[in-house]
Image (tube, rainbow, N blue to C red):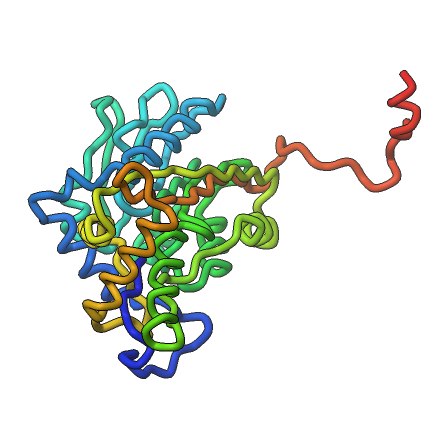
Length: 309
């Protein structure tokens, strides 16, 4: 996610507003991450969020015969046969697919499918009882189109559950780099890939056919020994910037200044705290048993009458 570039070193592209990220570059980053010997040391965010989504699946009262997980495979490992029968994992990175953990419950069938997480063309025409996604949506170019495709893959009265990194993620790093550039260059460039606001996700889910939308926003704060350790971990996660107008280099003096600012403004006990803003969501497709809101004006009591009872 990190864009490490001075403003004068940007690559020039003609970029459509609908295309922000280089999906091919993101696949290469994740291929590299998946085969790196230290990869398991930096999976703490994905593992935590995968567990959270798996826990939400365990709370569902209905059994899901066919489940689709979009990206990574960190959720599948936590699914049990009491709630699901089969899981299909789709990912554009072959190395990520190869390293993905199958469900610990051996009764759950597990299938890996190579395909783009955004277009979902590899599973087009299929129908699922449950779709899951974690740490994928913040790299999608066309979120409205993606949500429409997810909706079309779900059977009636079935849920879409997921998590993504939202606005204010890595704000300590962003502010430190911006202040360092302002001091030395008299201007600043964007150092983080754009992230959505929680209210945007709720609106997108609702406008693309999902009902009973629920959103939860949470912060995960992790401390690093230095700013460079944070940057290294982001790279090992495969979460480096893949913007179509992306960075080339970070000047040494900017990096040193940003590290000093980071420590001065946010440092705690010689540690560099970093905030990840996590947005969890669930939305349902319409179905014959889906609860519907009452029509406007159909109430039989006013709020005033209720408060007096």
